[in-house]
Amino acid sequence: MIKETQAQTDTKNDVKARSNRFLIAGLLMTSALLEGQVAFACGAGIAKSTVYFLPDVVDYCKSSKPCPKFKKAVAMQGSGRLPGNRVLKYNGKTLNVGSCSTTTGARGDCLLPYVSIAADPRFYSIGDIIQMPALAGKQMSLPDGRELTHPGYFIVHDVGAWIKGENRFDFFTGTYNQSVKGNAFGQRGLADIRMVDKNECSPHKKFSVIRRNSDQWQVAMDAITESQTRPTHGNGMSVRGLASIGGSR
Amino acid sequence: MIRLATFALILMAMGSAWAGPRVNDPKFMEPPYWMPSYDEVIDFDAEQKHFFLSEMQILVGPSELPKVSNTELAEASEWAESWDALRVRVSKRCDDGGSVKRTCAHLADLRVETLLMRQNDRIENRIQKAREDDIRAKRRAARAGGK
Image (cartoon, rainbow over all chains, first blue to last red; front, side, top):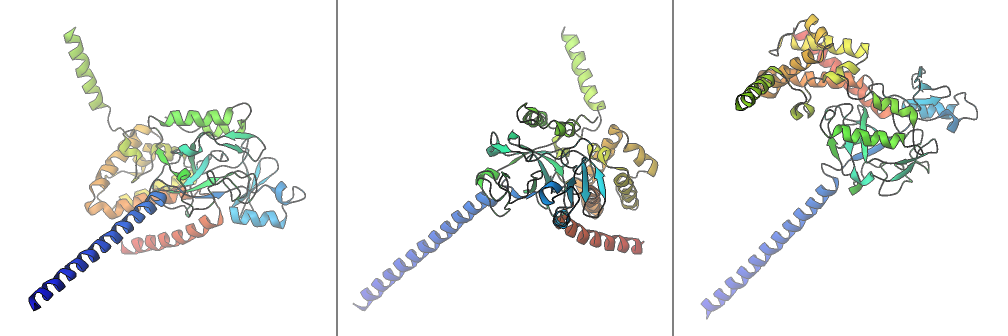
């Protein structure tokens, strides 16, 4: 009788132990799945994005003379746009950017709103292209009032010491600051387009890299050039900057 | 006809052997970037170029990396084939690691430092660059003191 009770107790313990093991295994599997989902959403291949812009004196001051509000914006962003294709630097120097309608990047190219990005030079060469298929075909208004049909490609035109990591990018939005309504990548942009929050790991930020001088590079470059030169959407000033990339040999 | 085809094949094989280093090989388009590409070098402004070439000379000089004189380095920076050849030699040695690992890391960092001389000047970049410049200055001073 005692033996039977012992056997029953053992069986009960076995069942308990087994169910505990199942519970633990279940928890581990759930945890692994969750981790997998997190990795899918924010891992490699999903951009950690922020935006940067070029303050324009006409958006900040009553006259073309730099006012304190504009100077403050220049101190934050590093430079600001003045009339006559000049740029005021944070250190008080002015720079003539020639025919460029914005400002120049790390290799002297004219930066293109919604197309130029800053990336980490440890992982990218200037001129590499970042492809984000989810952005292709999206309509965006440029700061000068024209419309851009996004080609789904970005050019690494700029660098910054704060921009670190393979999936870390800073997106140039022309003279649009991050909170202005028209800024498609800004705080008020649509959820499937905006780039302002580096902690927002959305599927539209999924990207791949097209290396400068690789076979696909020219195809991507042609698509970018076309998006910039289309008659109704064109930004003729910027195409000069595009033409100078590649074919350097 | 067959003889002609064989001759053409031999010529192609010889051609590929003579073609020298090929930096358009995808391997050289991918990180780690031990040295800047020729495309990057020709985009350097005068200040960047002077800085990079002089610092590279200081770094490579006492190391086991391929030796190159000031003149050779300056000439290479003006001629794609020559720069590519140097880059291939250095990259192969750096990929092998070993005793040059530390020098190669500094060389890769020198490329980054040179590119950051024309960085976007938003405040976060300026603050971060000032921090990194400080660390590099200390490292250079330590290297100079160790000589």
